[in-house]
Length: 378
Ligand SMILES: Cc1ncc(COP(=O)(O)O)c(C=O)c1O
View 1 (cartoon, rainbow, N blue to C red):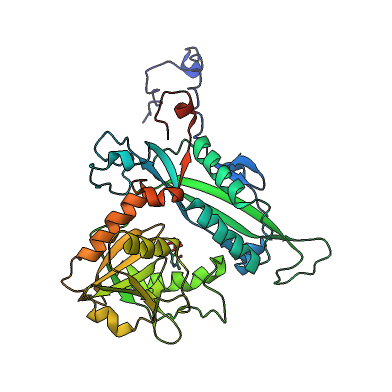
View 2: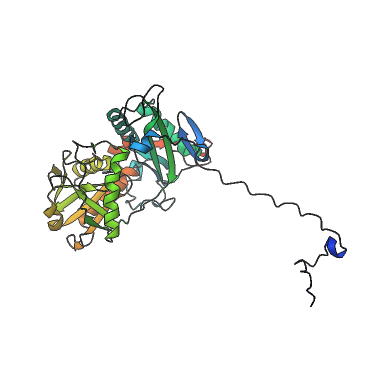
């Protein structure tokens, strides 16, 4: 039995059967690898893909770092109906106060406040942050420009212990260790439903201030939040509500919590082992100054969660989110209530520069196309 030698798929004759080898095809041009985003690291702008930090990273080993989460918002032209540019937070404000609105453009929200908090967190953890608040805001604006992030975006600065200085013995410590600062930015619109989420009360208690201050955003402390989120999602909930060691309501995994009953608004006080959220502060102010109910900052009992008419969460990432069920029980009517909707609206107006009294919280980011006159000018 003979076997035919396999024919080349294109029918070409090979040297073995007397043909000539086909000219090697010119290699297809290799597409340029996608460029990794710009980040700010140790005083310079570099590509994320060029970042190298060694295996001895102290902040990784011991959780000795601090961070922030900051948002920028794309504000549409005041003359056009409100519309998000990149699937971002909903913009549904009335158009009757166009003159009071910020000009179209990109604005960081509460950037100076976030960097002031970052500085405070650094003080706690003996981290040397070599830039002032205003320098950090300017660096962030440049980072957005370099990454062409002129839609809704999220900025994550992280400052952490880097490496033992010469002569510092191996071990867990805050002194004798260098510091690293990295800032990254990514496009991000609303990622939590504005129409409500489910929460479960976690069996993991919030770390007390006497163990690890949660009023600083310390990276290591977030293992506590991660355990709570893990438990909540395994039980089918969207997020966890954490109680403090005294069994009082503290906060959600990455958001502060508000309860509303009979039109009265309350939120856990700053001694309840919570992060003093900047959105929380803005919401308390907005309600008071824009004709809403005043907020009592007090102890909130677990039972209040089940007797509330409304519960909502606030945070830079999640913004303002109604909680419509807790531990499987509906909150109030099980739909977002009027105070929650008012807070969502006020927050949207503040972040999109529609409230002149809050314009100082909107830091404009001027893009090169804006300067050239080909884009919108904040
Ligand atoms: C534990 C915790 N609580 C509350 C918040 C909300 O804080 P902010 O409104 O400043 O983003 C966050 C988010 O940073 C958080 O991580």
